[in-house]
Image (tube, rainbow, N blue to C red):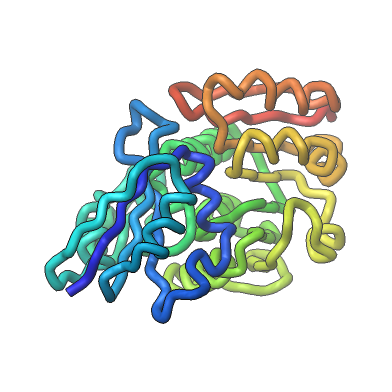
Length: 295
C-alpha cells in the first residue's frame, strides 16, 4: 500500500518545491513530492501531494504542513502506478504548430505538426501550463513573421521543451538551456534523447548547464544572444532585467513568462527602462511578454 499527504499551498510555495533538496532528510525513504494547480481560475491556489511507501509519521506530516499553509490530509491509497496514471490524465497539447504529448499519447501525433514527447515528471514545463503553451505560441508567431535567430538561450528550461521548440523553428541556431535545478537539467537531457535533439556546442546543437540566472561561464561565453527565453517568476524576471539586457544583441528578442497579468506591467517596465520595446503582451491570466531591443 501507499499513502498520500495533501497540503494546500500558494503558487510560490509549490514552485519552491523544485528548488528544495532533502524535504524530509530524516525519512528512511523520502516521499515523492509534487505540486499541482487544480483550478486554473484560481492561479495562486495550489496543492502539494507527497506520496509515501509507508505510513507517514507525525513528524513527516508536520514537516509537510510547514511547506504549505493548510491542514494536511492523509490518505491510504490502493496499489497504483501513479506515474502512468498521471500521464494518462494529461491530454496532448496543441500550441501553434506544436503538439506536445506524454508517452501514453504517442499514437495521437499528427503528421502535420512539430511533435514533442515530454514525460510528466520532475521538471516544470510539460506544455500543460498556460505559461509554457503561451511561450510555444509566441515562438511560432515570431517564426511565421519572418524572425531569424542564430544564438538562443532558454533560462529556467525545466523539461527543455522551449529550447527544443526554438531549435525546431531555427535548426541552424546554436542553443543553450540552463536551470537552477540539476534534476531539471538531467530531465532535459533525457527528453533531448527521446526527441532526437542533438547535444553539443555547434550549430543545430543544444548545450545544457546548471546555472542560477545568468551566473554561468557557459552563458557568458555564448552571449550575446539574439533570442532569450525565460519562463520563471515575476520577481526573478525583474531582478534579472539588467543581466538579460546586457546578454542581448542590439536587435535581440526576449520572451518572458511565469508572471500573472497583475505583474505584467512591472515586469515590462523593468525592461523598457533598459531600452527594450514591448511588442506582444499576450492575453489571459498568464501573459507572455515579447520584447525587442532597438536595432
